[in-house]
Image 1 (cartoon, rainbow, N blue to C red):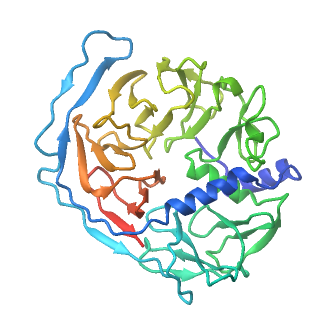
Image 2 (cartoon, one colour):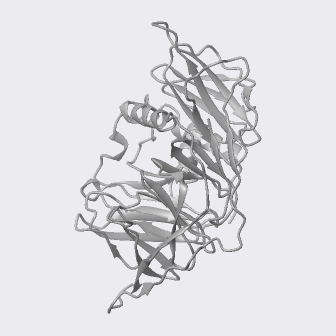
Image 3 (tube, helix red, strand yellow):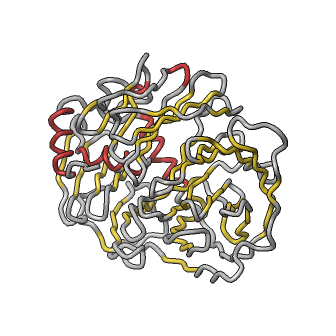
Length: 413
């Protein structure tokens, strides 16, 4: 399935959305503050791969009955494997000394951007932007205009393209790795910003929102309507709309896997019934999968898809998870020590899951065994890029390139 070149997408987006943007409001500001806070935790962590196994309860196929069989733990999940390398890479932008923890955002295992600031007394804080192309081993300074005293959001699209949102003022865009920046007014943000936001959320150029909304509305204005629609950024609504629901059942979310399939998850009603739909032909038709159920009312489950798009899960707020096996669901109980991991990411069909709450992190292997990694902290958030790299936010930023559960974890700053 062919996709248009990014230049065409930008051109279409600018033509279709000209004059429709409004300044970002408290929702995006709060998001920026949350990201800043969660990447500013001090302390050093050590990593070991001494696995402590715990049993996992696996229920039968969707619609099946009877007792849920117990998958017995194995002595270790890392038998014969090489332990991950422990490493710490400080974030230092040349020509800008600071002791404050930075804001760091990576787009893949190698390419990342950082915002660092230096505050002295009552003076406005000075800021600088850095960029890396070697996984944070070295950094160089971007040639931004003066950012002193600004409140800044970062929207990195790739190693060359970054949008800086100067809250309440304007947007700055670079497409050459920070060598030059161009300015955009608040009512006309560059389309690269929206594409970057979509990619980071796993939507890869798609969004679910109210008709006419842009994604940069104040608060929840873009999700407050009787009937939402699925749009492709730069092209408008998709040819055939899936069933999306309305404000009474919460906002549906869309994901685009690495294999090109589109997935939409939504609540059928406030009763906990969850609908998942999939399109294999760029939204020209939709298949509805069997409904699943969650007792975590008021919270839409997280649709978790591996980078290659082949491994699909639904992680619910009540600790249950559903794994798609062909066109049916298998149910897993992910409650660990009475705690519910709130971060779940797929490592692929042969790699299982990585699970985390604020206390600790585990792996779920393909053999159905949950194994704790004692030296890895619990995370406030886990993100995953298209190349499979994991990014854990909590006690610093942890970068984990590679595949499978036996992988290197690198702590930045």
